[in-house]
Amino acid sequence: WSLAWCANAEAPRRTLQDDPAFQRKNYQENIEKDAECNRSPLWGPFRVQLLQTEEDMRVELAYEKMMEWGLENVTKVDEESKVCLLGLVSMQYYFAHMLLFEIGSVEAAADAFRMVDEHSGALHPDLLDKAAGYGKIWPISADGLD
Image (cartoon, rainbow, N blue to C red; front, side, top):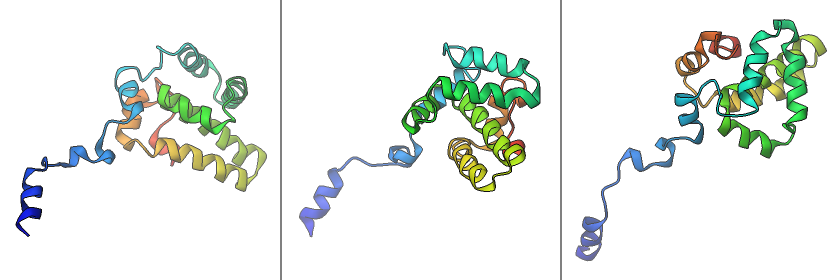
């Protein structure tokens, strides 16, 4: 008993900050320092173009870029989520919205909304809204995603 106690006494004290769940995520710094994704040669111009596009035409732009950038590949999606999470969520949202309201496919839309939720669910709703500039930086909001 005393040997086990001595071994434990010498072990470094661990806190919640040591838990991987509480470690900074890859996307956090990008959201905090560059929510506009201007450091990215793809996402910065896409954001500007998306905001300049009429609301009902945004899905066409999102789909065009999704195909052009190879974002039908899940591995590529995961990589890009670390570069520009809000851009990816915006793109996925418009695509999912189109599947539900224009195509009328509940099943396809549910799949697409799961992808939106997988990425946007990592953010507290207030943080998402603030980072998106309340719709002025990225045309999404926590309420809109719900």
